[in-house]
Amino acid sequence: MRNDCLKDKAAIVTGSRRGIGKAIALAFAGAGADLMICDVDVEDGRLAETAQQIKLAGSQCHALQTDVSRRSDVENLVQAAENAFGRIDILVNCAGIWIPGQTLIECGEENWDKVINTNLKGCYLCCQAAGKVMAANKMGSIVNISSQVGLTPGAGAGAYPVSKAGIIMLTRQLAQELAGFNVRVNALAPGIVKTDFNAAFWKDPAVEKQTAGMVPLNRLAEPEDIAEAALFLASDSSSYITGEVLAINGGWKPQSAVSSR
Ligand SMILES: NC(=O)c1ccc[n+]([C@@H]2O[C@H](COP(=O)([O-])OP(=O)(O)OC[C@H]3O[C@@H](n4cnc5c(N)ncnc54)[C@H](O)[C@@H]3O)[C@@H](O)[C@H]2O)c1
Image (cartoon, rainbow, N blue to C red; front, top):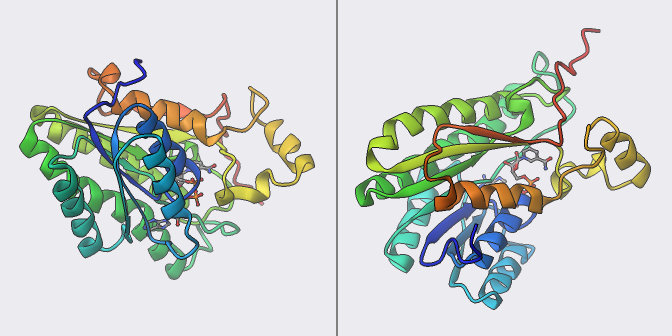
């Protein structure tokens, strides 16, 4: 891929105040894109810091508080991107939560609603709003962040694996519906990535060593590993790829980590 592979492109990245979303936004800026970044949490100043870093990289950047599970917030976000850039070429749906420590059979309705509304409904709302703009312009690339546990069951994550599996079918369905409008829709399925999201798996070096030991490549992913793949799917280098799920897991494919007793 060329260093300026996203030159003259405008991108929305949700959940971009930290972690994978931030790494993706910075990688896109490094490749020449202008950015609309957003997050539900703006109080800690990290979204504004990300915006500052993007501007220092030479790209335009606007930052907006957005709860992706609320239709009105998502419509504002998409309208703001259109107003700022006159176009939306790329959407990355990265905003997500998980509430660990619960099996699905014990998962309460509150956990279910929160996780499904943020991860799956949020992805649906953003795809629908930005996808319509892209379809009208006959051009676009959507990258949805699923998870390895959207492909294979994981332990104690309540509704999370279901939300991530839903994102995969949403991706495949929209890829079919939008292909005729020259809009591509793909998903990434990361394994275990070193972000605040799952600090319990790696903040302690001994625990990280143990976790990495489950991964054939013997290390956890860095956010930049996911950003590189997002850059590929967002760029014209993947112009003949749609409806696909790219796993980025170092070879880690738990068959079924859920204990039967
Ligand atoms: N870290 C991992 O191991 C891993 C693995 C597979 C998939 N993922 C997925 O990657 C994505 C990013 O994860 P991360 O590790 O960077 O986590 P993170 O917690 O560091 O970042 C997620 C961001 O999304 C934001 N967010 C949460 N709810 C939101 C909402 N309703 N509206 C807008 N923003 C919201 C959070 O405030 C946060 O800044 C998530 O979708 C996650 O499910 C992460």
